[in-house]
Image 1 (tube, rainbow, N blue to C red):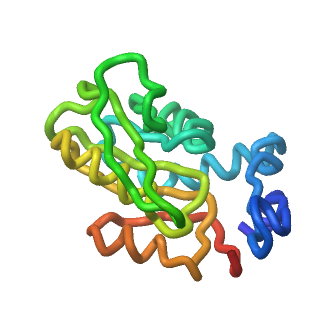
Image 2 (tube, rainbow, N blue to C red):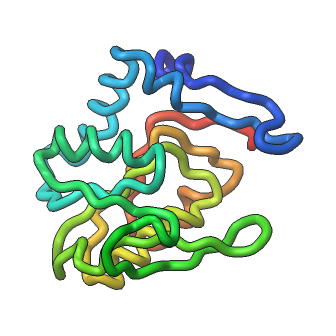
Image 3 (cartoon, rainbow, N blue to C red):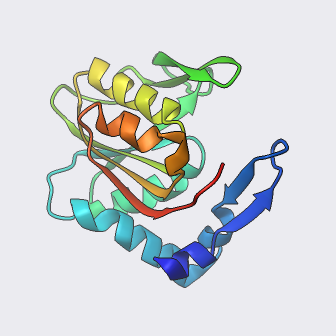
Length: 176
């Protein structure tokens, strides 16, 4: 995992001063690193019955699609409001200043389907929490949440685990 950590680029003061942005595109661009990340994110779920992976826009699409392929299951895009072409249901979540909304197609999940939530990074946990609430509103069962990066100081992983969702992360970075 320390080798994978070296493939993540850190951009200081982006998008605003004081933020250390963890850029996973450099990890995605390294063929062996990307393959290893997908294998490690998939491993805890390899023997579990999972019906679909729900990837959170946008980098969660990249990881989630590859994980769904490895698990032999479907993929559900969780998108920002207004981006889906069919009837959608949404879930609001808190941002630093205000709120935002994510959506899934209203028929994306059948009752009782087992869903794995995937995104590149867990920070405050707001988006992942909203994704879990959306899945549960459609009567899907969230079997876990997988993230390449955790920013533990921001408490997102604890927030997700408090919802009784097991989290799997590949690496943690201190600082925002």
